[in-house]
Amino acid sequence: MKTSIILILLGTLLGGTSTLMSDEFTQKDLKVWKTEYDSVVKEGRKVFTDNTLGTNTVTCNECHPNASNTHPETYPKFQKQLGKVATIAEMINWCIANPLEGKRMALDDARMTALISYITEERKGVKLAPGKH
Ligand code: HEC
Image (tube, rainbow, N blue to C red; front, top):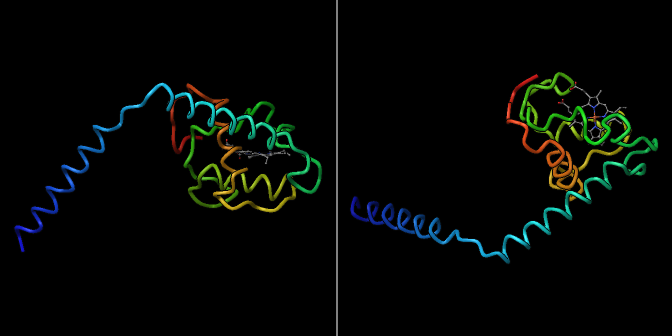
């Protein structure tokens, strides 16, 4: 019994190590990932400025020009509108439902991923400060 547990642990450890060691990226990988990422950021900018996202023609960009005052680096944090510690996706849904009078998105909606990518890209380089107000 004990031996088999040790063997399983050893296997996991060795397996884990070999996975770590295989994390070498080719120039081609890096290029594909950057192209994919850049296209999602671009799509995010589109959603952010889309006046059909909600029901009242208001866009995210009207209140947050170029993603200003979105503070992705402060998430997760307590948000009083939601009454709990929330992720940025939940706060984006709050803005969709309230200022835009729209329908909340599934948290894994491709448009949600695009919005978060765009917002975060705009704040690149800002130090992470989860929980901060
Ligand atoms: C009518 C103005 C308005 C519009 C339009 C709007 N927001 Fe907001 N947004 C706010 C207000 C007000 C807050 C709350 C600020 C706070 O308490 O942190 C907020 C907060 C946020 C936050 C959190 C900011 C922080 O400091 O924690 C994010 C992220 C955000 N909005 C994204 C969006 C996105 C994405 C859209 C479009 C779907 C959008 N907003 C549309 C007014 C707006």
